[in-house]
Length: 184
Length: 323
Image 1 (cartoon, helix red, strand yellow):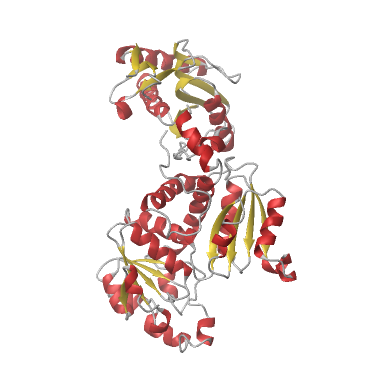
Image 2 (tube, rainbow over the protein chains, first blue to last red; image 1 turned 180 degrees about the horizontal axis):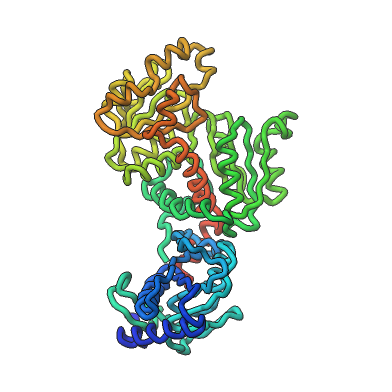
């Protein structure tokens, strides 16, 4: 059996997201020009939550969208069988000169962020990109750091940090998973 | 991340050897690729550094250009070879041509050839991925895939639909690939055409045969109208183009008598006024231009699925698990 330790329960995640939304407004000095983009799949759910919080707080609509970075991965030729490609969808406002907030669930090697930034550059010329993650678990392989973080943890390489969202997993939490290699 | 559960292997030769799951996998993969062609910068880096040769030994504009767009939008490097401009005219064999290309370190060959079986012949002899872009009267898998995708876009499903293929079934690789693909996905398939152009015993494939276009229209949800190759007239398969249009032409008066709204497909290039009337081709039931748009997306999906890791490496990677 895999061992699971809850790092953040639902209330903790919601408090973190509320603080993260405020930090985004602070960094951008208001809500003007913001675009929120979630990285598929769980980043999209988190981005929607942050968007809802921002819209309630700032009382303006915040454009949002989703990024699927499959076609920008640096390990595609080694992965196979091919991962299913999801759709990227951008708000009609585009990203040019906007402050684009890229939302992901867990920041690990930084390779997903690299891919997301490359994709964004193909979409246009953002005025600024902010990286916003619920959990930074360390273990970076690229010089990439987050701007807004929910929780920083030091996980060992063999451990996995999972963000669970109600839409996909039935609950909202952050969990540390120790895989039992024998059984797997 | 979810994955295509059954990969395609090295080549795409036809739809006959594929499973329903593999065909659905290609169609599902094509969906996100549609959006890339709508972007301002119509390019993603997924095939960067791959070299693809488009080996077109038979004339083709639409298929070749569609493949070329698909390749370029995935950032592959492409070379086009046509029969007239190659050493084929100097007597080089297909395998020698391919081996010479391989010696220049290519990754994929897209082949169009007049001989049935040419794509498989090549695929068995070179390590590069081979995609069949039409071989003789055997198969034209990417055309059938884009037809399937277009039907699915409009009718939300393939299963249970009644699709009738109209025209020259005998010589048509498009008809064969469509029949295999449609049947595998659970559609009912009909064929309709002059007795000389429908193979005897075609019912054995599990398709229904209609002798009159009116009966086909009465029965069908979708018509896939094939191009009448004009040389068929010279070789005596049909008496005249006007006669063909009068008996088998898809015309507005005939469609108006249909009991339901029929979707009309045509793989192109059209002979307006022969197999299809202009007002049908340009009318609201026609999805002919969407077929062309979908063609690029389907070919991007096929290129994407075939490219990359060899199957054995893929197996090894599956257990590794990538975050």
